[in-house]
Image (tube, helix red, strand yellow):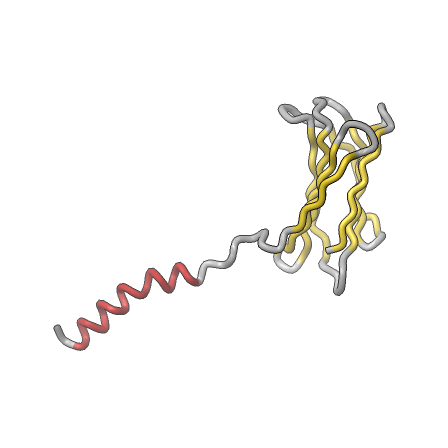
Length: 129
């Protein structure tokens, strides 16, 4: 076998390995999750991870009851990012809200709050990221 053929064979064998090694790490490697109980029967979850230089924030309430309407708000470093109303859905009786916010320098303080106006149940999740 000539040197050219050996070099070509070595390059052909190494090319798939090079392509595999350039695949970026799975998003979510830096994901943080906090969970807790609300003031009555529901539970909350707050998840934060980086996403293209920003933060992806997900708040979730699980009451195990379908059709409840909750008021929710999301704050980032004390400032209101968004708020609204969501209804719990089948099959789990839960809802979630996902928003992307700027990634400030230092520690970012995230707060997700949800209130069920029919039962006065309150859920509050806080995280420093």
